[in-house]
Length: 420
Image 1 (cartoon, rainbow, N blue to C red):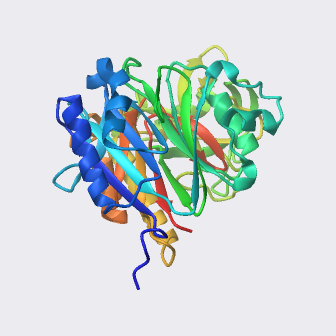
Image 2 (image 1 turned 180 degrees about the horizontal axis):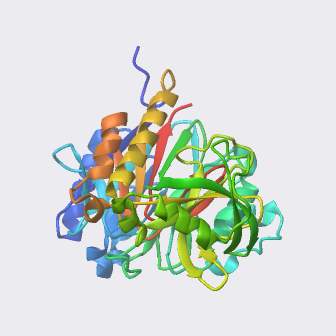
C-alpha cells in the first residue's frame, strides 16, 4: 500500500546554470515543483553563486512570483550543488548557478529565524537567553540548519550557546561565501527578507530524523599524546601514549620534540606533505579508549616557538586532553569520506531510508583538491543512492563532532533527512 502524500516526506533538488537570474529561478522552480508531484512544499532552501551578487536583492521577489513558500532559507556560495536537468547531481564551481530544494514535511514544525551577531548573549548566560534568539522551544526537540555571514563575529560562541540550550539537537550548515575564499557575495535569505549579516536558520521539529556526516579529510600519524601542560591555545608539554590511549610510553616532552619525532618516522612523501598540510586532532571524548574516524576535532597548527618547543593551534587546549598529529591530502580526504559513508550505510540498515540531503563543502575541496569534478557528491551517491542533494561551497562548515557542534575548515558536512 502506497502512503498518501500527506503522510510521506518528499524532497526535491533542482540546479540551473542559466546566466539570467529570471531564467534560472523559473527553471529550478518548475523542476523542483514537478518532483513534488503537486504536493505543497513546507520549506525551501536556496543556494546561489557569487556570479549573481549584484542581483541578490531581486532573488526573493522573483522567487515568490513563481512560488508561495511558507518558509525559506538560503545564501550565496562560491560553488553550488544540485540536481541538473539531466537528473545527475553536479557541483558547479566556476559558473553562474542556482539550486533550490523544496521539501514536503508532514508532521514537522518549521520555524525560520535571523540572529544579529550583536544580540548574542555572553557565554555565562542561561539557556533561556539562547532560546530567546531563535524562538524555538527546546521541548520540541528541534534540529537546526544554520547559514551565516562569514564576517559576523562570535560564530563559535553561537554554536556553543545553541549546544547549551539544545543539547540533543543536530546543528549543521555553513558560512556563506563568494568565490576564491572571498567574503564578497555572501548574502543571506530568510523567508521574504535579504540580509548581509548575522545568521539565518531553520528549526525542524517533530516527525523528522536528521543525521550528520562530518568528513574532515585527515588521517592520523604517529602516537597519541596527552596534553600535560597547555594554556589557552598553546601546547607546552605532551606525554606519548600507547595504542590503548591510556598508558604513557614517553615522559613529558615539548610538543615540538614530539612533532619532530613523528615526522622523522614518516616516509618521504608524507614528510613533504607535513611541510604544508599538517594539522592537530583533538579527541572529543576523554573516556573513549579506541579512537576512529570522526572522533577527532581537526584544528590548524598555527605556529611553533622553537625557544621553548611550544606549538600554537586553532583551538583552546587543556591538560588531560588527547591529541594526535594529522595529515591532509586528496587521497586522505576521499578515504575519510568513504569510510564515514560506509559506516553510515551500515548504521541505517533496517531503518527508514534517507529522503533528502544537504551538502556543505569547503571552498578548498572540490575540483581544486581532487582534480576532477563532482567528487564528494558522487561518492555520496555511490553509497546512499540518488536521493535529492543540494548544497554549496562554504567559507566554513558547521557540524557535530563528539557531542559538540563546531566550525570546521576543509571539511564536507552532509545533513541527511529521514522520517523517524
